[in-house]
Every structure is written in C-alpha cells, then in structure tokens.
Length: 167
Image (tube, rainbow, N blue to C red; front, side, top):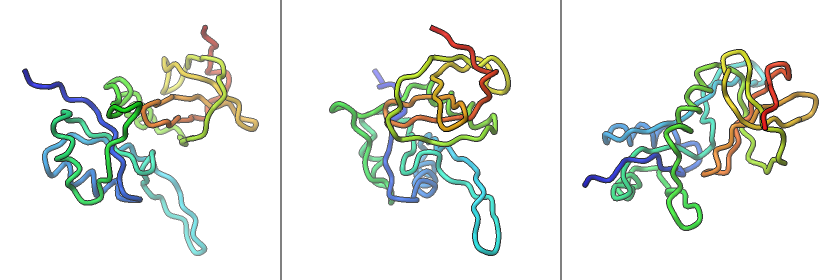
C-alpha cells in the first residue's frame, strides 16, 4: 500500500527559501512557501518586497521514504525533527496559513514563548470563524494562530470588537 503524503517541515539555508521551493517544484514536488509583502525603507527609496513568512522554513508534501531525495537540492539543509520524529503539519494548518495570507491582513511572526491567553473566535471581517488565542501586546490586540511543529506563532492585529471570548 502506498504511503500517504504529508506536509513535512524543511529547514533551508538562510534566504534560500524561494530557490529551494523552485528547485523542489522542478523535481515535481508539492511545496508551500508562505510569503508576505512588506515595505522596506532605504535611504533613497521605499520598495515593496516579498519575504518568507517563516524565515528558513518551507513545507514539502511528500512521503517519508522520499524525504532524503528532497534534501538533495542545493540550499536544503534538513527536515525538522520534533520529539525524535519528523515534524509534520496537518493539511488544515496549511489551509489556515493560506487563507490567512489571502486575506491580505497585516501579519507578523513571533517565535517567542507566549503566555497562555484567552481563547477567542473572530466574529467579522475576512478572517471570520478563525479560532485562536488573543494576546495583548503593547496597546494592540493580537490574534494568534499557533503552528506548534515549528514553534512559530502567526500574529494578526485585530480590533477587540471582532474577538469573542470562547471557553
């Protein structure tokens, strides 16, 4: 019986996420590289640039027996391990990230530990229906989507009025 494909988390060389994604796709693999747009300020100009949402990480959908093959492309470093096993991300989490990026809301990533906060559900706007955690950061409310397999948290700034506390 053929093994099911799963989303594995690959660590890449610094700033090599786009190239590794391209090389893996050329080899016929399904790859997801979440990208965000930001405005960079130089001394003489501003420019919109695309950057990886998670520095050094891409997601590769493959079978466990083909992981080694994926690592043969230039810029691929290793697959992330978690408690002795290869870290995998559920399809639902990948879809959540894709949907989040499609909304166009401002997103930032926080790799630090976050104190447990209130569980919330978003009541309105493009992210209506999402559930996660609300964290106070400065004078703004942030909505957290946790991606535990890579110890990353996606934070979205949302007005408090859109958040409903759930138990």
